[in-house]
Image (cartoon, rainbow, N blue to C red; front, side, top):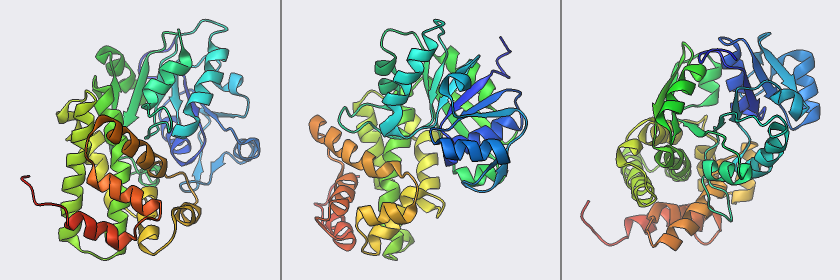
Length: 338
């Protein structure tokens, strides 16, 4: 067993974020495993030692790339789930079968930002259900973490949340690097929902910029969007203060103003008159905000909570209104007290 600052870490998913984390941690830690579900892609990485997304990166010798899940998980003391939110359950079920052979209780950290469509569960809830009776410590890592900037060596910060704060404090040391500062939190609900709902607001921000509506309109949109994030999160048991932090306001600002953001780019394409399917095809990467919008709108409806921005983004994606009509509908809402 290694010390808390240098755990053997297994990263599930070799996409832009999973690959970036493997590269980042591999520069400063001694044992990193990266698993790719795509065998062809995995073989290419094994042979070249290079990642192609979000930019070309050369992996250090500390990173061991695998196509075999059991090999990737061997001796893992910490698992980072970097698969997309809709495949999280299936992956955790496979991992549980492998880990339970040795009765290991390895901490599992979701780094995805979304809700499972259908169940409307947060990723930590999905992981717990998939793990069933196992006592895996379940955490979430979130924050303003644009993969391309981190892969370019620029500094960033994130927050690691767990219901057990001592677990979060221990693991934050394992994930912290000179250019990546990790804070700890015991508000798992708030950290997950902040990173989830902001993706919807990012789509709306892309629509606003795509229509060239200006800074005033966008500032109002982000402010009211943050209010929606707080409203739903508090109703689900989160602390409002969490939403003012890295996983809420911090992630919101980063995602809503950067052309590096997939969800922001979905909004730009919607503003240009593209359908949501066309927008996803053009962006060519998983934009969690698309599935999240449908899930959050269903959740808010079930809870009787009004989320005007999320509802209008959903209407645009369904093709019920144009992007311009979405903005005008928000402007035409009844006047109220802030």
